[in-house]
Image (tube, rainbow, N blue to C red):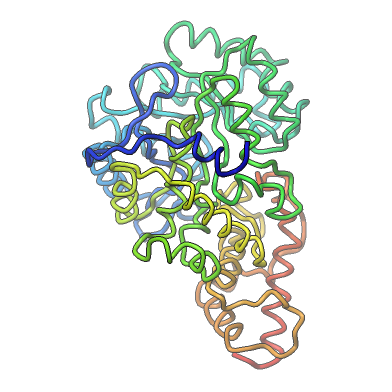
Length: 438
């Protein structure tokens, strides 16, 4: 099957109702195709609670307002985890959701036993039980084994099989305290196939994968990192009739921001479409996908995304082809594949790792940072980069404080060599300063 016929085959019917699009995803009620991701909850300072310092300052009233608006506009799927927002996300979102009838919302949370100290049966079971307390519920609609793939097949078996916790979770599903049991995936194809090899034994009700129009055919090209094309994961799940929830449809926000290279490919088709809407429509146009997650720190993003999914306008072959061109244009740029997930945080030396890498990526996307960073003739665009970097980064959180300890890298789902990337940013900053081009 060629690419044109493939995308024609996966096309989903157009809905002209003007209401939120819903899909069936496992057991229970239909889910909103737009899911509310609870990793980037708003703080009292108006920022995202992805940082250690901000997590304790989550703005509960603003979260309540987000949840109220989301439910009123058809969103019923909320995705959290014990480790989100430095351990505060479940309790905060639980308080917000408890103000609404239980039948109005579906909750997804995870067994985040990535740390060696949490891998025993007793520690994993305690984490599972705490989620019910924080979320104020007697059942969890979607329960995931968190970040499956890290550590490969052996890591999966150690975290979930040998300790007996997965057998316990299956019994919890039989008892009705878990309605759907699945996993979220970050890794290569080998690890994914290993997780799926347990399907006959455990019966996965769903799986969560990273899927964007860049990852679809170019997941292994985003850099030299431990990835697999999303198309491969999608087709494996499709073959087993396993529903899919999507994370990082905008690559942690990178595809939601204006980018000159991408804009040249997409603007001719729809000059008024936002960058984020293109990414969300791509993920939502896959029929096996039942929800597409978005971490929406500002309510304006909820409103924009609700509009995209109310209803979803599925992409056609011409639009799929344009997004493929956009993906290739994006890959031709010198970005660092950071999704700002915050798993690398907190840094023991106080660096804002996602912030530092984000400054670099934003400058690349805006055309302010050419990729030949060794060029001694720094243009005005790079002067702008230095000014904006120093404005955005407090002195004690900048790249020059990195000692290269490497504690961050093992936690990165994108397998980024974080110290090397930090050094890259710091090297450019120092060259700009030495050349007196501020």
